[in-house]
Length: 314
Image: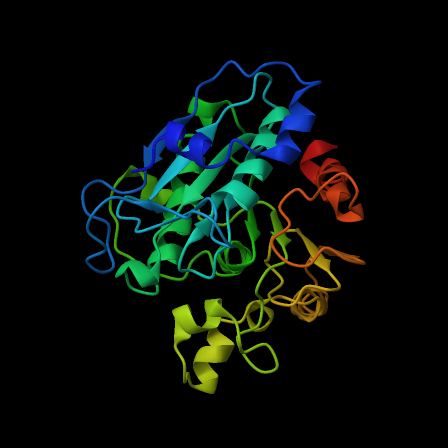
């Protein structure tokens, strides 16, 4: 299991967060971790050995070889009653913490959200392809069951995801009742449906012309059937019971271009669901909070403005 110290050592740079934190009050709560499963998780045998953190290159600060899925909890000094489960991307073969999920978690924490960074299992580590989806459902149920422990409202719990984590977050929002595991403890009576969802540069479609992603290969393989492509593409899963969603893309994203979010946005509207879409002129893929010179660095404020328009905040 990764210690907080090792994460900080890999990336003393949470640059986007550091700037925000300079004018913010110090946070009083230490980060804590909550295992998702009692004993061995369901869905395969998993990896052996310690977790791995990427070094130089595109995988810098990303974690893999995950045997113990868990939630890393960021409590704010003054809670606003809302919670967000945050899922970093990485093509379902690693999770990008340093650049994606951790900066977002810290921004949300500084703005009053109770945040749960999800360290989910990966098919590449020897788990079934269903394992990350089981982990996300289980995380939603644990957070909702323990809402009072964290000072949050059980009907104000959302999910946020980036890239493959956006696929995971979107699937959880659109198919919260799909059965991925058997469970009987006290958490299993809670709903896994998020109350809102935010997807950043998500992988939405697993079919042509968007059939080249690592997400597709890890979840449905190199030569899937059309039925499998449709079953795991978020646009085909859109339904009228979907929670409100806000979607963000960059027009020059080479991995998850705006066509992904456009297809989901249109499918949600067609089903009568609530959705909002923002496409930034540039930024590429995997931008996290962005940098101050990028227009897309406005996305956290756009998210917060969108949240204040939710019915439960009126």
